[in-house]
Amino acid sequence: MTRPISNGLLAVAVLLSACSGGSKQDQPEEKQSMFTGAKNEVKLMTLDPGHFHAALVQKTMYDQIDPTVYIYAPEGEDVQDHLNRIEGFNTRADNPTSWVSEVYTGDDYLEKMLAEKPGNVMMVSGNNAKKTEYIKAAAAAGINIFADKPMAINTADFALLEESFKAAEANDVLLYDIMTERYEITTIIQRELSMIPEVFGQLKDGTAEEPSITKESVHHIFKYVAGNPLKRPDWFFDTEQQGEGMVDVTTHLVDMIQWEAFPEQVLQKSDVEMVSASRWTTELSLDQFQKVTQKDAFPDFLQKDVVDGKLQVYTNGEFTYKLKGKYAKVSVIWDFQAPEGAGDTHYSIMRGSLCDVIIKQGEAENYKPTVYVRATADEGQESFEGNLQQAVSEELASQYPGLELVKLEDKLWTINIPEEYKVGHEAHFAQVTEKYLDFLTQGQLPEWEVPNMITKYYTTTQALEMAKK
Image 1: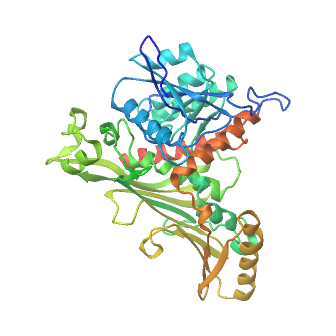
Image 2 (image 1 turned 90 degrees about the vertical axis):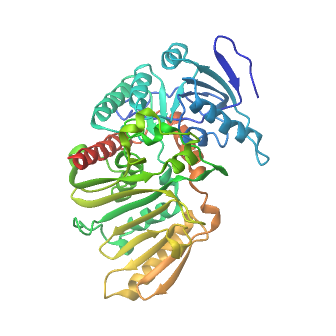
Image 3 (image 1 turned 135 degrees about the horizontal axis):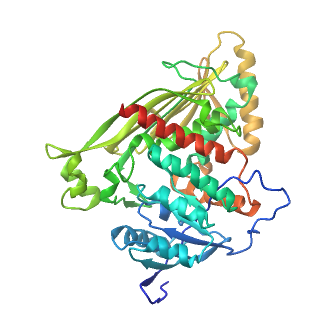
């Protein structure tokens, strides 16, 4: 649907689902939220969309979100690519969406949004060089913010992010980042099992060589999104704009460590002790760069990273740290393209005093995330297996019917998960958006969310600082 608009406003069918966060635990309980859950009461504004995640929030529609979304952006390919993705959702044969976009393009896009404020929630997913500044400006203007990760890519951004949370609290709005991986069923099962003492025991302290919890992921520069080859903007390969791998995907991994190892507990910066950190580059040929960006040459701003005709990008990194005395390790690797039939992969292990709960997603698993339970004690195996069976068939299956425990060998089991729970990465955006809408209606986030977001970005930015030394 297209709506004609004057004064530089352009109309295109669009919506952006957004939500946000900012702690309100200090607010009086009787204070009412400005949101009631009513139809169309959430009015979205999308600021400078440059990452495909901005569109994925809109892959579905939400009763609480008005179909008209206000988009403010500089002119260029980023905003047009975003609009094309939304139009694709609107015109698909299966369950099409019906978003309407009102688009303003101009160099003063931020100022224009702040002056007009046609919406009450700002969604931001794009160039990370300015993202934290956008967040701070919106929070100061009393606008709720639903932000794609990362919200900070260096220590200067982190300081600004802390100020943004203070502004959000002062102005009674919610600032929240989009943590889709909390909705991955294998991660949920890993977390739930680790919270059953009869099965998991207690999380080990671990060591630097064998951490108590490890999260590793492999991502790919060229891939398919919503059934189409993903076109990435050229600035995606500039770490001054996108951020290094150390502070990008690792945001999810650190979030899951906090969410699983210390569920619903308030964490502080003082709980973090960095142990080691390293980073290295992914090499791209000009042909590969052209394939994913559709640009003929490396732009001038990337020439600083071109060596012998190939682009060197700091997309990879790993770090080990202690969180409340527990050793944790995070690793992220970017390859150009996955093998045929494969995709992004994830590996995770939580080490308990009774068992390890593991997620693997390799060739043996047909590149599908799979949960394993490996008993670590030599004695009491019959009792352990009984407790594990009960945990899966009763406690977990009460929330997720159909789960099945399968013994593979002595002291090793897997959990079969019905396909209905394997909704995939793109569908997680709708799930986290629905969650954020609930928070808006409640008028607050859980009391641990804001301090833990601060702790998370402190961890990633400190890791980068250490890796650069």
